[in-house]
Image: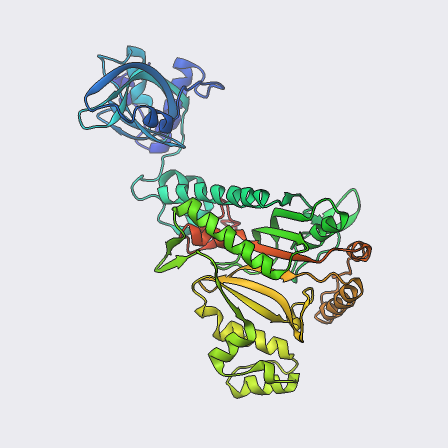
Length: 498
């Protein structure tokens, strides 16, 4: 094994030192990257098992652990070994450690992955420690780790090299552990509520279910241009038609070839569900129960901090019709306005710049976005959207300009969107044809009518409530993440050349 004389001949360049040590290790011990290693406990299991072990007490228990070296003191006498579950201290000394293991110590760098077998004890200072009897090199790291206590200060580098961000930043590590817990919590909640999970296609020959610019690809075998889905809605509704289940959901990736911001990413996660014989009010109740359950699972309470705000996911949430919210904020009573021309005139008189061809509903929605959205800090359901911008929802009885739709807001962000779903096949076709004509007028020539979906609706879809929840934004709130890229494990980045 390496001795001090060998170590003193190594290069002064940190990366080169590691490469030279790797060569020495290959020569001296052979396999530096063994295929198999059996540990008996994770660090968390070890800490739990010996939680009651008193200070300055040594057991006779021999355990085997493994992990990455995060710190080394006194020429390797003390090392902090981390696995995914936590940290354990390793102690090496001639009184307890084999000569072969002690000879390996000069070859171990911060970042190397090692296996350790030894006796469990707790130091006088109360640190749970393993007195190393045997040490094995499991993976030689060829690159230095970022400085542990500062991590990666460059935000863009954190996103590009997420493995280093998690390795050196406990907040990032915990956030992604919580992401996993939230996604599995959504799935468990939906299943417990009687919903069946299905998987629908990611590649669509006709894109639809939402209005957005798609990502385009090509299927070589079928010789067919296809699109990454912008929403699973139409396939999930076809599932409801089939009678497979009355309550269906999918946790899915959607792709929209549009802008990037702290709240928008072209690739994002949605939970979308449809519930036969339910309506939008049933979906409001479902959202409240789901949000409350997730907050309790992460924080143990329905109240938690996001940046400088104290949020509460305790239901019921505030419910406010969009026309009422706009009237309260601006004094404009849209329900008293009869025509598109009057709506545009009222908006302009109040100082809003609206387009010359905007409809009554478009004016209402625009003013809502301008004056109301930013005030919705605590969770709230905004209901009664204009039909002009909600072509696939059922009309509000007695007010045909409005539909049974709501969006759930929190921190001024839209988190969910839900309808009492349109299931009249003739009306569905009429609205989809109208939407297609509008898309073509905007220059979206590739937009097509989804005849297979319309054929399924002709077969008969039961009345239903439909809901989509933006999972990434929900995770942002629950994990105190100010940017959506903080909750996406490996967000898309421009190439270094750009």
